[in-house]
Length: 503
Ligand code: UN1
Image 1: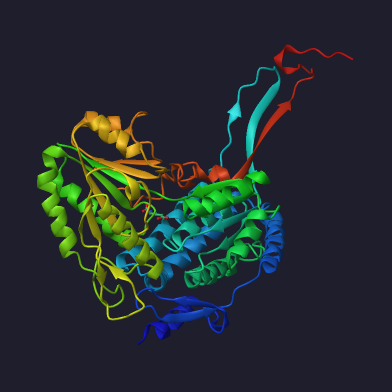
Image 2 (image 1 turned 180 degrees about the vertical axis):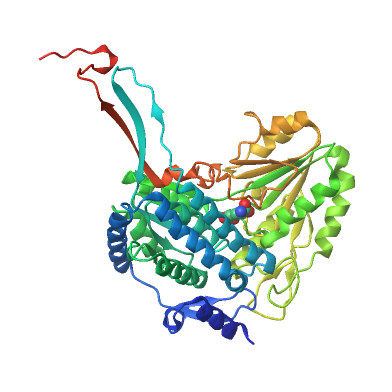
């Protein structure tokens, strides 16, 4: 069966109406072969405004539904996702080009966050706080926030939505979602899956609890500027964040920004090199280098450099590249020609700075419009120029170091601050890496790579990564508003700070 037919069968099986993916103005291509697989109708900024108003009405009902009951809807969503895992995972492989296990892994991440959110729906705790006044009680209450806007990127087209939506829904919020224009099909599938959960849930779920807004930049801007969207959670480039952040700040809306990463690892003299090799390979080449957590820079101690590099080179030379739909290759395609061109440009610049490149060339899949690349391993004389920037492609820059403190300094000397790792069996180095003067990233790991975080922890990073946190831990607090309440159950009216005001 050709990819287009398979896509349309999958979409129908997932519950998407044919009208939603055929005859529209937005052409959808699979990076696997480069062919058009669907044409999705998109909406205007005006339509988006109207949809947000409807989502606001949904919020006004949903906020009154008790938290644990809201959790039940997310539990059903998790069940529906379990039932659709194979189909949705396959659709992710078609639309983004992820290999099979990564397509399925992305859906598993959605199931995991649903499970997390169900538990959370009974744990939206506030504190009880000691007051300085007799006969008083002080506490904090967490209330639903409003309409939560989600802007997601092509590389995790469904999981990132679920991190936000699962939390927002149990927190009593409604959700409007603008997926990447490159990946509207998986978004439509999620909408259909969600609608099934709503149907099973019954009457107290209002209409328009989730709205998928497929459209261009103007649609995104309508969401970012809309006064009834108190929080926008946006995943994408730092360039995008620089536009979204100030627009939200202007109207005092909240931003959860999850932007670029230029993630690094340090391989220390005591490292378990077998383990490091496997972790580096997955971190740098997995998802064809198109995760925001992809390993992009590696500092290797001079004493182990000559032991590790030949093995890394061999891994790069032998890694399988190919169609995720018809082969078991470990590296699938880049999302499009633009991504391939950016990769080539970065490699040219690295060469000009003295970089020695293994790989990086185009892999011929037989389809002129599909862009596969052999992952590139680049030995750099120093960290400069293009190494300081994120190129969303499988390029790993490797540099030698002699002193751990110097490696730490180089590690932190980039704009982004998402994920990081150290390979060492020396506890002093490990602890130093995790300490206040160690990695400056939101994620810091020991003896595992930079990518592949579990949902239980808060996910996000510092500096140009935007500072937002999604997923686990107490990230839910961004999706609610906090009220501090003081109750006087005494017969007096003592004022705080000893102030007297007797009338
Ligand atoms: C992303 O690339 O935007 O930690 C998210 C990871 C995944 C999420 C990546 N759990 O690599």
